Length: 206
Image: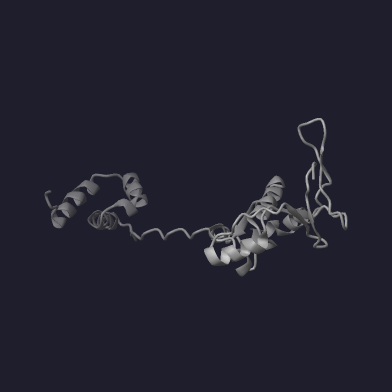
């Protein structure tokens, strides 16, 4: 590859710029960031020769947009609960994020260690998100069938704020500590988030 002589290139560009109109030089000034140092020097010299003054400075980089301020609106122990809450917020048009989600996916036991998963939303959505999450669970859902779906209730206090425990969490927690993975030991048990009652679902034939 032939190496360009800077002085020779400066003279060549100087002769070229002499033949250009002021409008053409203005376009070069607007694109000065794309010019070589030699071209910028030749351009500045030509503009000064015409009685002008040119300060070719690089355009400062645009500042990055600020990261949205996130606020925690709920803490949940399980990823399933977090996904349910996110679904509720999404249905209300609220974008949400689960902090430490990837960490807990690798090891469920860490959810207890870090103080449960944090459900977060943008600061401007926090108040509305808390309203959505505080709404009572409907007792009956409309589904695509002849009959609706009746929400299970706590047999002790009648609350519909309940959850299904498909694994034995005591043994699952121990296995998480020993083997870094919870063992899915089914016990078919429900729990009430309101009064902490526990009961088994014996099924239709139970």
